[in-house]
Image (cartoon, rainbow, N blue to C red):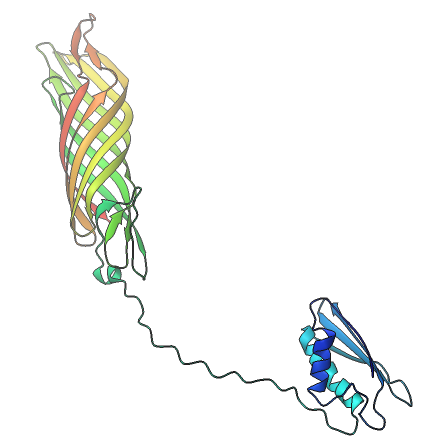
Length: 327
C-alpha cells in the first residue's frame, strides 16, 4: 500500500498519520479486502484562516475524487483524514474512533487558607521606620500603599526679624507622605515628605520718636521633612528643611502722618523647623510648629534725610499653632 504524505511545518508526521489511520481500523499491509485502496495521496497546507487538507485514494477500479476538509488546527485535519483513509483502506469495516489513553484523575487540591492582610483590618498606618535602602522580609498577602495628605492653617508670631517688634504670622501648609503597609500590619514611611507653604507676616509697626514704620511680608517656601513617627490616627513628628523667597513691604510715616518712604524688597531664605501634629480621627488634626529662618539680605527703612530707621536681622524665629485636615 503506497502513501504520499505532504504536511505543513508543525503538523503531525507521516508516522503519526499512519498510527491515526490504523487506530481507526485501516491497514497499510494490503489486507483490506476487495475494493480497498492501494494508494493514498494526503496533502495538508496552512492558510490564513487555519489549515486545509485533501485526500485522494486509488483502488483497482478507479481514482477517487479529491476530498477536502478545513479546520483551525492541523491535528483536527489529521483526525478527519484518518477516518476517511481508514474507510478507503478497509471499505468492508466501519472505521473506529481513535483510542485515547485515559489519565487517572488528579487528586483534589487541599483547601488553602487565603492570606490575611491585617493591615486592612487594622486600618491605621503608623510608620516608625523609613524604607530608604531598607530590605524587609514579608509574608504572603497584600501589600497596602497609602498617600497621606495634610492641609494645615497655622497662626502665631515671628520675632527677631524687625528689632523689638513681633510680627503676626500665618502659614497655609500642604504636605503628603507615602506609606507602605506589609501583610502583617507594619507600616513604613517611603522617602521624605515633600511640603509647600505660603506665609503672611504682619502687619506690625516699628516705632521711633519721630517715625512709625508698618511692616508686612509675603513668602513662599518648598521643603522636605523627615519623620520618626507618622501615625494617621495619632501623633506625627516632623523635622523639616526648606528654601523660600518672598517680598517685604515697609511703609514709614513721620509724627504728622506724612508718608516718607514706601518700598518693597525681595527676600530669600532657608529655614529649619520641628513640628508635631495630632490627627483627631479620620479627618481633622491640630499642630504645633517651631522654627527659624536665615535670610540672605537685610531689609532697611530710612527717613527723608536718608538716616536709617531700622535694619532687619538676618535671623528670625517663629512659633505657631495650627488646625487642619488630613486625608
